[in-house]
Length: 111
Image 1 (tube, helix red, strand yellow):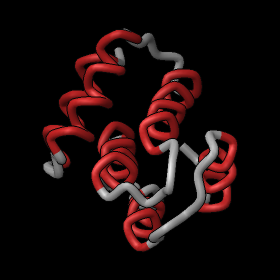
Image 2 (cartoon, one colour):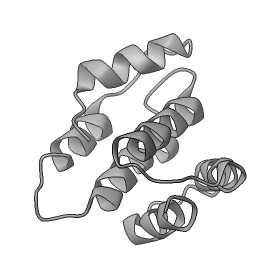
Image 3 (cartoon, helix red, strand yellow):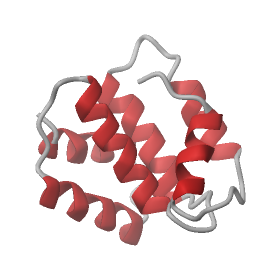
């Protein structure tokens, strides 16, 4: 996905949030430029930054889900909507930081 910090902030603002801390977002955006990692792993870094680090005052889960849906659309994939909601809530609630686990969860519902 081609995503900038400005895109991320604009999307989250649409969900009623404001940026509280941008360091994890900056790292996740930087990882989007790494051509050596898979698209799923890039999405996993973005999800971890949003769902675990809670950089926004509101709309973190909605913002993460939005980018999963954008990923699906751009890559012509299918998504299990119930499972993506489950994983969104689970990652946020359990503070799952392991990128491989997040990537596996994304792959389980996006095919």
